[in-house]
Length: 125
Image (cartoon, rainbow, N blue to C red; front, side):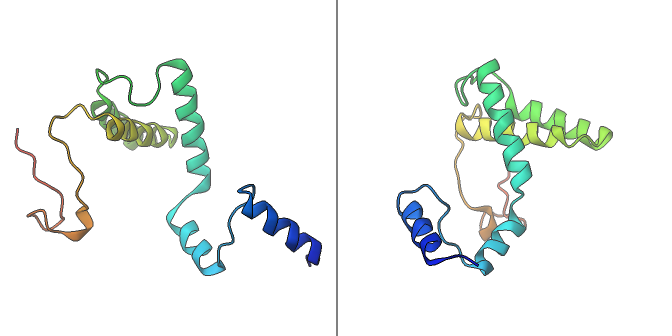
């Protein structure tokens, strides 16, 4: 059990931004259900490593991030190596930050108002 001084210290740390904000248990359990902290930590580490090896995120528009992500996703279905999923997530973020496709936009696809039942826009080439 925490003492009063523990609660005061924690409150001061939160106010200074040095401790996690107070989150109700119900909200924490819902967030944990939608997010995997281990995946996030591995993804961030890989992203930082890539920034040192190659370039900062979004600096290289010549790189085909989507093609590479699709290739790695296919490789994952064959090998089962989940490290490839981390690569896919980072490559998709790279495309998000610096899209190669002209005319990209963001519209929430959960609303289902894009013209097809799944809500995903149709792309004609």
